[in-house]
Every structure is written in C-alpha cells, then in structure tokens.
Length: 333
Image 1 (cartoon, rainbow, N blue to C red):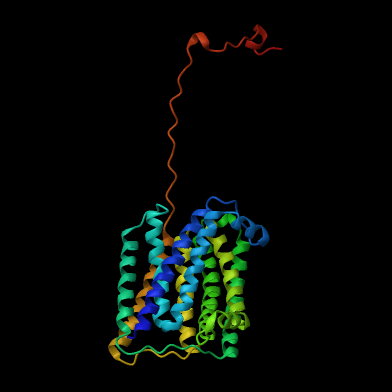
Image 2: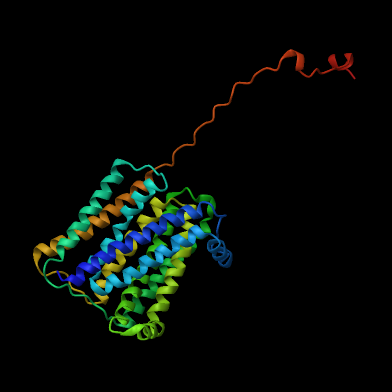
C-alpha cells in the first residue's frame, strides 16, 4: 500500500471522529433549544445559529466533511467509506461518556466488531497501489442521483407529516434515517466527484475557480442542506441510537455500491486481500444494522416514581375551624 493510501485512511479516521463528535455536540445543543419544524425553515436556521454550542458542533462536522474530500482523493471508496461508517462506534462511545447514556453488552460488542472491521480494511490494501477513480460520467451520475434525492425527500416529507407526537416510535426514526441516508449518499457521490475536479488544480485561485464552476458543489450543498435539516429535526424528535445507525449504514452502502461503479474503481485482485476487503465491508454493515435493531427494540427507561412525603397533621391549636349553623348541620335550608 502506498504512502498516499495510508494518509487517506488516516484522514478518513480523522473525518469520522470529527464529524461524529460534532454530532454529539449538536445533540446536546438541540436538547436545550425550542422545538424546530421543517415547515419554518427560516425560523429553524435562526434558532440553530443562535446557539454557540450548536455552531461548534456544526463546525466540527464541516471539518469532518472537508477531511472526507481529502481522503477520497487519496484512497478508494471501498476503503474510505467503511471507515466513515465505523464512526457509529464513536457515536456510541461518546454518547456513553458525554451524554451519559448506558450501553449494553451487545453494543460494546458491536464497537469491538467495528474495530476489527477497520483492521481488516487496512490489511486489505496490501502492498499494491490502490486504484482511485476521480472522474465520472456526469449524465450517469445525474441519472442515479436525482431519483435517489426524490426518494429521500419523499421519505423525509412522510416522516415530517407523522408529527412530533410520535417521536417515541422507532419506525419514525427509521424513516428519518432512510431519508437522510439517501441524501447523504448522494452528497458523498458529489464529494467524490468534487475531489476529482480539484485534484489537478494548482494554487488557491485555481482550486477556488474549479470549485465554483463545478455542478457537483451545488449538488453536494443542496443534499447536505436538506439532509442536515432533516437530521436536526430527527435528533430532537428521535433517539440518536436509531437515526444515526440507519442513516449511516444506508448512506455508506449506497455510496460504496454506486460510487465504486460510477468511478470505475476496482476491488483487489488478490483473493486474500479481496476477502479482507469484502469481509470488512460486510462486518461493518452487520455491526451498524445490529445497532439499529437493538435501538429500535429497546425501551426508554421508565421515569422514577416520586414517593410523596407522609402528610403531617397540623396541631389542633392551629387547625382552621369550620363554623356551620345548625341548619347546615342537619341539611335543611
């Protein structure tokens, strides 16, 4: 494996760490903000931008996306994206220590499984140089991306119509996860295409011009904006342990399958490396799906019952005395 591939893998790990840390910070901030709705987009933006804590989480997420663009210029999709998907394990660890959420044994086991998948993916690169695709047919990408965007937006609209009153229903979290996963998957395709558009540009001016003139920038921005808006609403209405795994696994699998095909990237030819690569991808997907199923079947802890303090009778000397006339005492007028 070349040095650039190692750098790409390192950037992918930094990307998913930064992105998911920002996600946890946003979850904290949203818990202190008033309810947000997809029908009042301007109000949602003003509410979010008024929270310094939410802005700090959002900044970390943007840094993570920037690192992902750099990673995709150096390593193939089938190496970078499983590492991004393994970031669900980071969400679990951070939710335990930051949000003080309890984790079960099966969830800790999934974290270990994710770590094993990362090792397998790194080992699958071997000593051969990885083929990284940078160019794609724009018409083919559009033919795949636009139906996927429509499917994601329809799923998001359906979840929004369900209303905030059903925020404890796991199915609603799955709907939000499907919607955001599709939008993030298309955004990842645009990020990959954008990384190829700026790869051979030299200087800040040339890179800036290439970015602004590329249609992939606006496809990425639109999908990320819609996906992040839905995701913020989902974080406030649903449990993060449901929305994040579903969104992550769907977006990652979509990107790996479609991206490898569109960008003409090849899997390793060596049988051992191919087995490690496919095994790492499957183990990552299995771990994320298991987390999603466990979160969906889990019940929120019952609220603690407050034990009322025993009533203490007032002393006879201070008890209010009720005076009733003789007629009231006998029930006559």
